[in-house]
Structure formats: C-alpha cells, structure tokens
Length: 172
Ligand code: NI
Image (cartoon, rainbow, N blue to C red):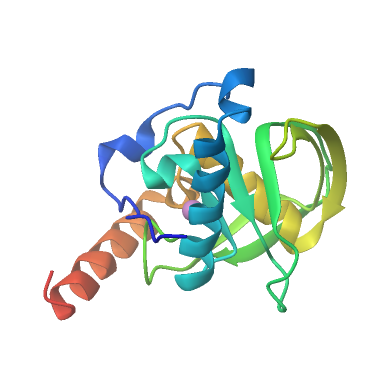
C-alpha cells in the first residue's frame, strides 16, 4: 500500500464534480488497490474519511472509518443520500484538504444512504451522529463542496487566514 498526495485548499481540482464509477472500474484490480491506498493515506493522516476527489480522482467514491479502533473500514461507491432527518446537529469538522482548520457545521443528524460496496454490491445504511456527519461531508467532496463553504464569509475568511499562517509556520 502506498500513501497518496492529498490535494489542499484552494486547489481548484477539489471543486470538480465527480462522475459515477462505472461497472468496469469496479472490476479493475487497480480500483481495489486505489481503495487500499486511500485507506492507508487516511489512517496515516490521520483522518476519518477521504473522498476520491481529495486524491485527484474525480469519480464518486469515498472511504470512511469513524471508529476509535480504526477497524471498521467502509467504502461507498456512487453514494446517494436518500433521506435526511429534520433533526440537525452541529459537529466541529475538519478536513485533510484544509489541515489544521476546524469549525462547527450544522447538518442532518440522521441519514439513509444508498451505495455500492467495494465489489459493487448495493447496500443501504441508516445512521446518525458522527458517521452521518462524515458521510455528508465526504459526499459533498464528490460534488466539489468543502465544509468551509458552510461558514459565514467572516468565519471563512478567518479560517483561510489561519490556514495561510499555519502553512507559513510549516515553511510551505
Ligand atoms: Ni474533507
């Protein structure tokens, strides 16, 4: 398994809307390797989710593991959020493409998502809490959307300034 470079804000490639994963892609061993590499990259970062767009693959899939034990890897191919609860919940979100920046984002507390697993088998998942937040965050990536898009202009400006400052400190 190898680490993949992660695109960082404000890279405009993060704004690309992903195309659906085709059946022949699912059957390609290179796709399975890419998923393994995405998990390795996400666990190393460390992060709880990584969308294909973040590793410069503009197709609709993502990997997630929100467990503390890091032992429940989930793959979502062509995910569609079919149902969202009216109940909302704010979580402090971060993103591997916007390292060091965290902000509260309000999203639906519960969702039902339909997707294919890594072998193309359809499944449906109804969940809430952190996993539901993470799925919504990653599906946004597939649509070229970032969590800072939800912030007020003032908060977003502050976040971007902080990101620039952190980069300078790291000597980038
Ligand atoms: Ni993200």
